[in-house]
Image: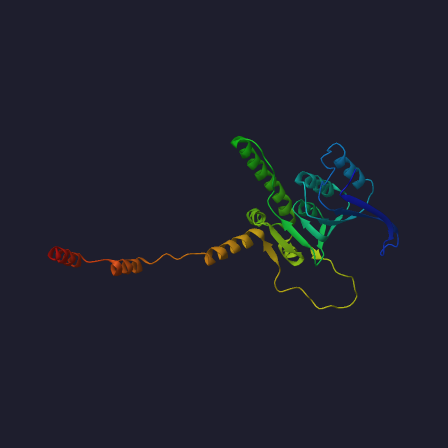
Length: 257
């Protein structure tokens, strides 16, 4: 069975008590439920049994583009229910369903070069209009459940969270800390006094906003201006022939005959 998680256990010395303690580290890499999560009788139980097989605080490293939201919900619940502290460290990307798992951390840290992304849930559906309506209703409910996790962590307004998901929002580490999705940024421990390098502006990228901006620019450059009514009338007048002129020409034709 291929698993998208890996445990690493080792004994370390507590610098305060000088006692040996068991350090447990969990690595979540790749797509959530990539191969085996759908074996629902085995995989969730296997993950839970490995999670509760030890005691003490755990560190969870996340580098995942997301995946199955049900699998993510189960991992989130297991980590939330865990008796020890759960420290989340995002070293690459925590996108989509993986961002939900990250919200289970007692503390959430992000690498200064990592990204966090949230968006609306998606699915595939087949059938008549009634089945499509059921799928839409289901997605709406799933979105509300995901917002629950974001709201608990960030304390942000649900409407704003919904808008961020609608826009498929990407955040760098500083923006994630600013909005409450993360608590701090990972850095090398040192005794030296360093200058505060917090940027004056943080990065937040919206896929929808970029697409709309691009379409507006294309529409602007491809726009064909319609002639003004006044110009059209002048062109018509310049090409038209007056009735008196026509009568004059007719009289000339009659006299010629």
